[in-house]
Every structure is written in C-alpha cells, then in structure tokens.
Image 1 (tube, helix red, strand yellow):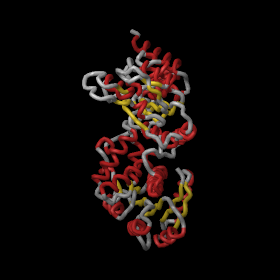
Image 2: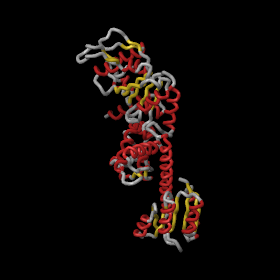
Image 3: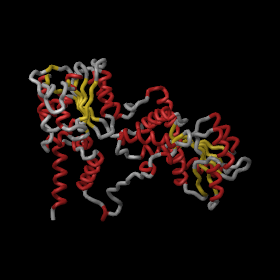
Image 4: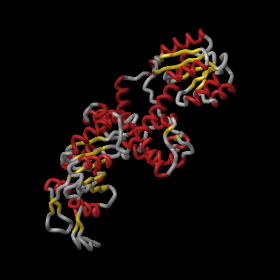
Length: 455
C-alpha cells in the first residue's frame, strides 16, 4: 500500500518512530503535535488516513475523531489507545474512528491498521467516482472499464459493420444477448428488426416452425400459415440464443438454410429467400460438444466466423462496482427510494464475492438491496444472505515444511484443475487462459484421471 498519512501525537519521539516505520511500508507521513494543528492541515492538504494518539494536551484523540467525522467524513481515523482501555476504544469508534490500536504496539500492527483504513478510503473514492460516472448517463448493463471488457468492446466495433456471423460464448448471466443487441445497434442493419429465439426454450417441432415457418395444414393445429424467423428478420438480424441446445436433427436444416440463404416452410413446396445477419450464443463448450457428437462440426464453422468471448464477472475487477452502482441507480429510480451509493464495506464485499450467476446475479442482488435499504448507502446487511455471509476460499499449494512440499508437476495439475473449475468445465476457455491447446489440456486431464484410477 501507499498513501498520505497524518499522524498526530504530542510525543515527539513517538512521531519520529512512527513516521520512519510507516515510511518503510510506503506511506508519506506528515506529523503534527496537536488536534488543532491536525484540523488545520486537513483544510490545506489531502490525506488518506489520520492516525492520532488518544491522550494529548488540549484536544483529545476522541474529540479529534469526532471533529474529523463531522468536517471530513471520508477520511478514516485510527486511534491509538492504552492497553486494556476497551471502553475508551469503543468511545473512539462511536466518535467516528475507523479503527483503534492498543499500546504498546508493533509497527507492523499499526501499518496493517493504516492499510485497512487506506483501502477503505480508496473504496470510498471509487464509490463516489462510480456514482458520478453512472449519473452522467453512461450507465447500463453493457458497461465496463476492465481490460477484458475493453477487448470485447473493441471486437464489437470491428465486427459490427460487417455481415459476418458471430458466435458469442460465456457463462450464463454474462450478458450475451446484450452484446448481440449492441452489435445489431451498431450495424448497417440497425434500422431493421432484431428477432431472437432461445433454442432451449421450446420443443423441437415448435422450434422448427419458429425458425423456418409452416404452411396451413402442415400439422395438427396449423390453421394458418406462418412466416418463420429467418424470413421475418429479412434485412435485419436473427439472434439464436443457446445454440448449443439445438436438437441434432435440426442442425442439418439450419446448416442448409445458412448455406443456401433459403428456407422451406414445414409443409411447403417453395423455398423462400432471406437476407439476415446471424448472431448465435451459448454457454456450452461447442468444441467439446463436437467431440461428444452432439453438435455438428460443419455447422460450428458456419456460425463461428467471429468469436466473441464474454468474460465472467469475477474476471472483470472494478466493473463489479461500476455495474452495481448502475443497477442501484436504476432500482432506486423505479422504487422511488433515496438510495445513492454503496458503503465502502459493501463495495469490498461485492468485489470479493465470486458471482457464479454473473451480471444477472449482481442485478438481482442490487434490486433486492435497494428494496431493503434503510439508509442512503447500501450496507452489508442489505445484501442477500449468500453474499452477506460469503467468505472467499483460500487455496494453499504448499508450506515451508519440506515433508509437505509437492512436485512441480503436481502443482501444475492442481492449477489446471483450479482454472477448469473457474471456467465451469469449459475446456476451450481453460486452455486459452493456460495458453495451451485443447489437445494438450485433454492429455493432461486424461493422464490425471488414469493416475487417479490406478490401484
């Protein structure tokens, strides 16, 4: 960590020792010998943390913490108290102090308290920045500042004006349909329709009719003819969601339609031409589906002209809070509640959560939190129970005892398993992260499985 610390104590020797100690941890330390001088310094300079002794001549540390909480509420205060003075420490917290350290203390203990306070200050600034960012109207679900999302936005920019078929992959809830709609919005077909269908949401016979249409009397209850989505989306965009769930019997019909740019309605004799831009999405590993013979390889190459991979939310860093603030602002408007932002502790909890449901889960969590909020800032208690009680897993692959250390090959295997688990079993994504090809990954996993089965 690094930052600017204001240290207040009327003991000059203590000032010198703490200034030198915190400097070794990367902090720039400014010292004063009284509370009045500290308040004056805060009006003329910017500090990340204030550290103050409790007992000083003139203004006490508790009084100083109270004054700072009133005049500079964003700056956390760490109070140094005498050993065993629990009641005094509680009084300091009630006065607005962020944390306390008891004397005698190790400099490393004080540095840890300052680090926590600095992180709190940084989160407070980030929350304000994100609140301002969303207030400018640049919010929405398809937003992000992370490197992973900047790469997605760049790919959208490059492919939007073409008619190339696009395959969008990513875990459930990452916003694949939003990306499809953004590609359509930026395309030369933007003034025409985007029609969408979820291939997993209807039975095979109904899906075939939905895609290709049918004539009157083609099957029971077909009392009128119906134009399918390929023809209905003529000159526009057709979005097939969950393409990995498309029944195997329909895949050759879809392939032929894409090759010939014509469809024959069920029960019809004449083929009908169409002109659509195709975008498909799936959360399945299609290459693995090809290996298991549940997806046609020729169809895969027909739909996968440009591949857009949407990163999981846990891999998007600061985008979590940016999205959270956007969803929060939207829910506050809809519910007519005066909820404006996230408390720093809440922001930290959101950033540490692994978001298995991705952006969709975050949107639902913020809607729930705003509905339950009692204050202008969302607190941890407002979050859903699964997030409120979440504790990140700590993974250790070795210690300092030689008897506990393992071979490099074992460490590699453990990391491969960890990456594969993080990718929800998607071997293509795992291979990309590991920077190895899928065949190499398959061989490593197969060898691991065989070793596990060996007597």
